[in-house]
Length: 354
Image 1 (cartoon, rainbow, N blue to C red):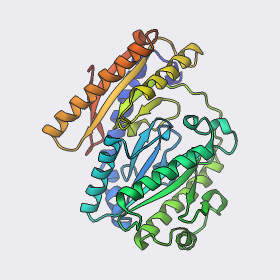
Image 2 (tube, rainbow, N blue to C red; image 1 turned 45 degrees about the vertical axis):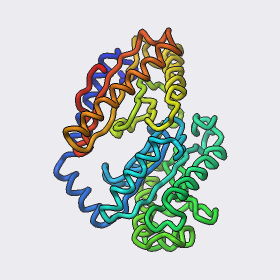
Image 3 (cartoon, one colour; image 1 turned 180 degrees about the vertical axis):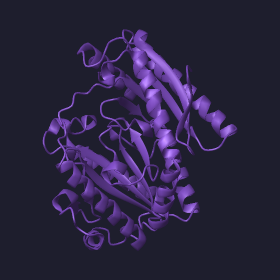
Image 4 (cartoon, rainbow, N blue to C red; image 1 turned 30 degrees about the vertical axis):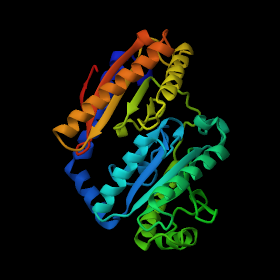
């Protein structure tokens, strides 16, 4: 039986096991050494702003070791650097990387499907042109905050075609490079030559590291084309996740993830609850319950971890109150859990009631 069809308590146990296995794999000595080797060869720090959709898995799509690319996810892929918390989180991330001597490549992504428009982003009502316009606006905001000369932070608009997991890179002058059109054996030197005119102001090391991402994507797309993929997958989400620290949840139709960035968190929580209710009503998931999980990451033990606990508990209470107020018929079937994510080990800790 698929996990989506199991009783809610079994689904929650399954989730805990997924989180444990993800942390164990992340902490494996070979994995740790692979990350260190990768960073030595490719020193550019890479962040991705993306939709919560589990199909958008940039590390897998670029053959990059887990833990290298920093994700920022939000329901629908909506971001606004005017949101106080989002601006603070991004600035903290950038300053940390710069202090370590790294430049930052920031991919601002939208996604779409060539095979069926209704497999594109529901957050933009499947209108890809609107999604592109939105991420171009986010790029302009990043340039306003971190500078337009791109000496330290380089924002790059990147499309993600979900049928083949192919990247579409948007150049500074409006040109695009659709990696799905290139042969799988295109070398990095040729990729660098194609990328340089698109990003003429990009530092050479960053350009080389972007070429590595592109080469990894070509390899992945070639693998996808030899795989029998199920594209028309029903939405069967049975979790609402609020906060940060859900990297282990890169799976299709599992969770609706709401980053703690917007000053109006009630609206996406209400929409996510409506999706869960619709999934139950249609029989796509059992109607015995759903999980509301709140999480906050911490980097240091002591005050930092204690503050993360309080943040997770607040987010859980806030989200649960929205569900009870806006969706009273759904509320009795809600199981609420909180946790904190140990950033060093990627372990989800202290999972319990708020």
